Length: 243
Image (cartoon, rainbow, N blue to C red; front, side):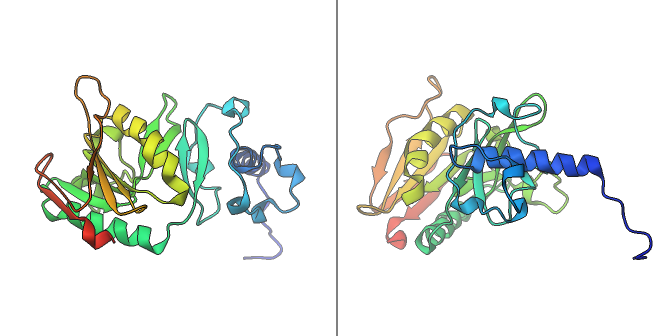
């Protein structure tokens, strides 16, 4: 690059990035709002130590929801979901959680129909009329159309109606979400089979089946040794492998 011909900064881009950071701090900060001007070095702001605030996002500039450009401002390594427009930061999984996730993924893949595939930690999105992301969930394991993993597939996220099976491995930081919140969310989205795997007080799998009439889940069935079903396809999970 010619040092005598420096690149002029783009004022509009600077203002845009500042506003995006303010949006993120508004959702990831403590209950006391902090704007970008109050942070000496915004790029070094440690969001992993922040407490998620539940203040209204109606105060955010622009349409409700998040764009890919906005989310690109979140520091790398931060795990999050979006619930009704709020960013929800989630902790990194412990090794047992990751191992259980891969075991469940393998079990769901074993007899998967040719047009489906089971994958670990893929993204489900719900967009509003403006095309902004208002819901973002990342089940520990889900079954989705195989076409979405092909090399020429351009969409990197999944629509709720494309998911016949979702599974969550409950950990200390996800008890309320996995046991309550996602039961309601996945039922509303029409996920026919939701599997919840618990570690304490002993390993167990809870099977949720969608009632086609009420569009809610029936009372979950507990499995302590083996989970086996033929609906929506043959699945067998040996729970001893998760202990």
